[in-house]
Image: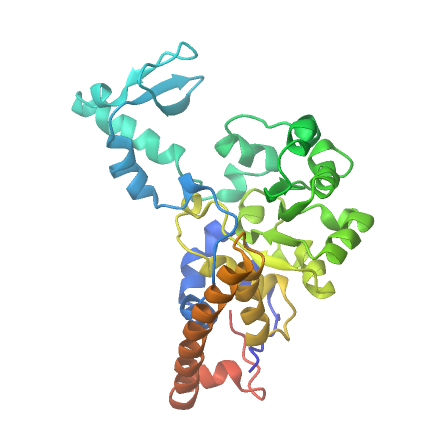
Length: 337
């Protein structure tokens, strides 16, 4: 079965627009409704502090004991301490909130600091640097700095390195790709710059190393504007091992993998891609996980049961509901998003 899309108008093609502007439109689309039901396997690339919702962090986590707050250069910092250090003028958040007026103000600031949602994302985050200013804590170091220590680790330890999350070429950020491969990484996180290094890309394919693609994150952080221009389109076309993940969904006010699957299916993959492609993507998340072979086999059996239920449900909808027939019938080339 194929979902046929005609790209007659870029303004209505949602993956060409900033995700923060089109969340509600995506949620209304028929394709998204299918993808929400689809069993997607595992999340292999996500940051634990941004998996949960903004409301949970504000109304639950921020009310836990020993959470301190500091305002430095009009930037709010939150950190748990038994005894606060002297790096900032830390105040116990629970004490700050004892003043009701101050509590309301601090809660508003905490909310703003925990999300990238804004009415005009293009204006708020016009460049990669501006987007990173919002979420980056401390700049990291290139992998090569830790090479000696990593090489000393037991070969039984599997490495999964974050590398190449940049649109630059020839800097330490994208050259991390080389060091990740030399350090025998099992997956590459983001790998956005991989296609700029053909030799490394070829090695990734030869070794069967999966690339963790986080399409929404890359767009919101201003690495790419139109998903059709994302380098992962080339990875998909070449058959490179890929897993789709969500990175920081809480920052853009969503949960789960469905939104990234939507952007990948509609924007990164060929217009002729179908359920077979989506099935392989979901299976990849288990095949390229850190589980051992027996655990992978067991997980795939459980996943296959869920897939069969999904396909049967989809078949029933196709047979009994004209809305779904319009999506799959090859003679009807209406534009669907």
